[in-house]
Image (cartoon, rainbow, N blue to C red):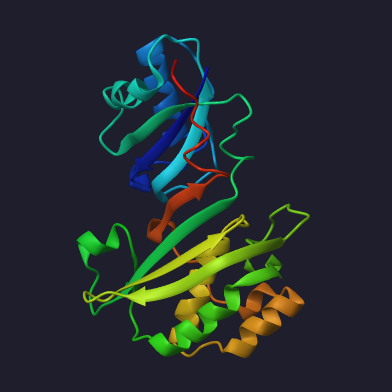
Length: 255
């Protein structure tokens, strides 16, 4: 049977999602937990590979198993074998056609940053530090430019090997909390490598008065990465959720 997992994790101590020779990863922790619980060596596939230091509130993954454990019981069973910074929020039976990556239709990310005279240790674990005051209105005006179906090649990390750089952003907004933390939230049908972190860096640069709306428009038309802001640190990025067609209805009856 195929099991769908909804995961939350603090990425601070991990070298991203994907298993690699040097460094502990989230995928490795999940697969080790499945082995401990079922005795099976499985491959756990996620909706996407979060980078080193990136967090998740609603990452989705799946794996196939011959275990007799009821699907909904995998969550507590795996949690008993996982470290405290990785948790399965929900486990469910899905059809063999379900694929956590290829079946996904929308993803939502959030990027947090804050302005302060000094680095705030508790805030800094999940948000990037910005030393200079920011123009909130200028950032909102630039944020509006991200929405729509556009060629985002200027928002892609240098050296990325992707032939199709057109993506659809359904919603993008930036908010400011009472404690001075800015949150950039974006929903799209897919994202290029470092795209959200470059978007966030572009908002910061706009807030600092270093780039204008016209610079961003020119970057869309030319694909020139140099017209945009820097790539922000990984720790401010969180994968909030992944949406699927008829989400919540793909779960099969247990009988």
